[in-house]
Length: 157
Length: 157
Image (cartoon, rainbow over the protein chains, first blue to last red):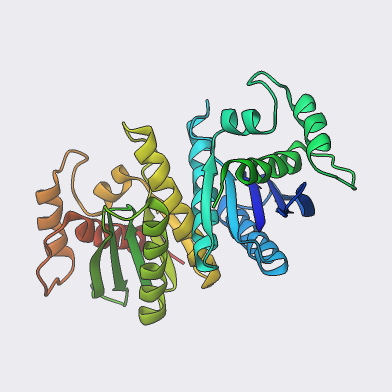
């Protein structure tokens, strides 16, 4: 089974496709898609949608796993990330993909860390869980891999 | 110019298409699209997207006018409506339509009422502004007409 993990955001969107076989998961694709801050939010949302569509079309995942952040200190930011969430769920469904949502504590628990693990510790743990044969510079890409692995660990059917 | 006005919501989505000519605006289409509470939020979001796509395809608007409600007493509801907003903006852009957002006070001011006008008073005012030759039972449909008229009044180009 192929899982598309997404760390939602409108400045940076983390995307990772993993394949779950009988053994360890394989990383098929990962990227951090960034949008230009000079563009309007509407234009950025459109570009994010195109990027999500491209990754689904190229890598044919069967499920989407989404990091769900409901609370944010900034209400405006939270609302805009919620709009990105809407586009992800909608696009998944147009490709007949079901989307599963996981909270940050669920993700940290699943990738083996305590709720207090920092970003760097999570990244180190991910390298133990899955072979990452590329350089990753932005946390969003790690976060996308983490939510895909979380779905792989939690979802059994 | 044709304007698609939308009152966003995941239980009820108000949709109205008006045509702006040299004189009074004409109501081309309006409806309140409802989704079944028994469905998952993800499924409802998908059905809403299909309804928006259908109205755009059938009535060819050139602009989308969206009532923007950023604050809600219920954070979960606000986030889910924000997700609907994301789908609307995204779908508009895929049809090359620009979306314009208006706050409730802007809408009330534009349709001629005070900020304190209640739902019934707004409905009465709308009947003076545009010919509505149909029975409207739900406020969401009136709200969609109101935001389309607001865009018609405010946007000049």
